[in-house]
Length: 214
Image 1: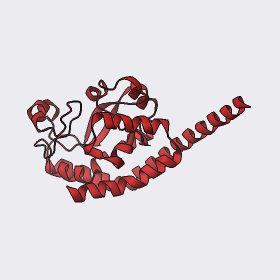
Image 2: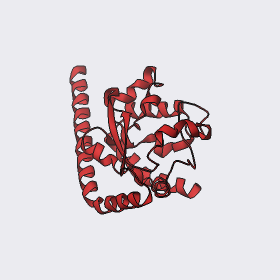
Image 3: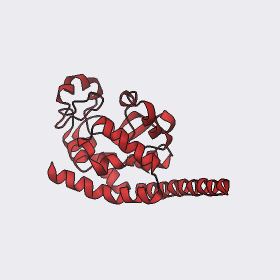
Image 4: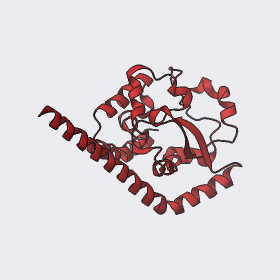
């Protein structure tokens, strides 16, 4: 009896995971088609604003802690990574494991606009289409941040990282590294398709409120 219940539970989880991937593929495919004109406009604005590539590609830690190339619209000058040490003193996080630099001098004019409305994140739909990310999940950490994830918090790597997730809805930049890890573990342990849909619905209003407060 117990084995039957367990088997049914596993089957239900597998079906839910399958539906999650189907939803990812559907939304990413349709989104990339519908947003193509916006992508073209943003690409043109980036080109006009500063020299350099349209996309910023960065290695992030993904499923199973495997690094992958995450896409964003470029919002900084081309030598921004080389200049990181120059602006670390502006980091608002007392915890050196996190990096958040408001009014970063490396950010371009159009880049500031894209960041303000989270438009720079849209190319991650490409990562979702390729199966490297999901619409919802733990945010993919930079490799230098991921090395600080220890112990039980490593369970965050058992699911695909997401474009949005609990961080965006429950605190964004105000969270500590430890709080972020707790939210990620809670997401993995209590995941359901309905939880994903709830986080998706809550993401846009949360971004809008954060822009009003900024």
